[in-house]
Image 1 (cartoon, one colour):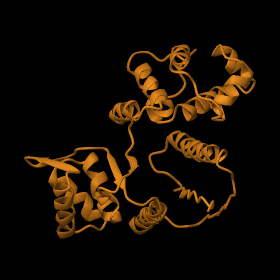
Image 2 (cartoon, helix red, strand yellow; image 1 turned 90 degrees about the vertical axis):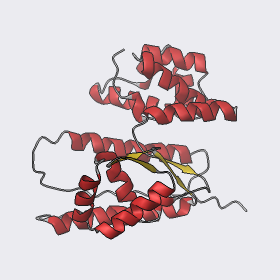
Image 3 (tube, one colour; image 1 turned 45 degrees about the horizontal axis):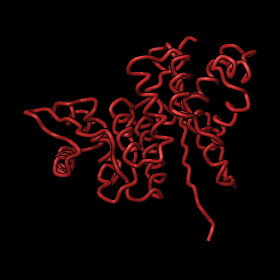
Image 4 (cartoon, one colour; image 1 turned 120 degrees about the vertical axis):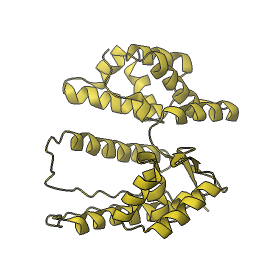
Length: 273
């Protein structure tokens, strides 16, 4: 089979398989789940249970599926660690696989931990931390930070905090992020931070030029689901975000006509007392 998606974009093998099937069925509308199961040498019932998280893949079978999908070398090894991280009952194995995944996964990772959450102390902390990944020299960082409203005094204060807490290191006149994962103490404040950050970015785009809020539409949902369905909700949200990215990447114009502002927050509230 021809590879369709980048496995390094995923931390969840079920979401990876779901999106792989969606990608193939999008390119070929007649490609059914039964056809996908046939190509993977699985029964359609078994595959359906896997994709609905009602059953886990064994490592040996998962490795065969990855081979069938065309993944070899480091991609295959990454996929095996996805399976271990998501299915192993051993905390040690899960920890080792998570460390491996973090080496390749391109996005910052949020982990619940009481030790530190400095990156999310403010939008400015998050922006400076993120900019260091893009602009390593002090001169570039100060220049770009100033453009988005962070003056030199505030910038230096944040840099000193990040250095003190070992989020970053300095070598001569360059800064480096020491670990792409950052940590939160309280999940309930994450969605508030996300909303504030999205509004901040949109506001800056409006301030900087000829962007106006001409066309707006709003959608909001509050859903009641049982614990078995919550993973499907989260998968659907992540798939929506990835789909939006893929559509945006098709744009070929140097200057875009519209900015689409999409804000999504998920708060899982367990009301069992």
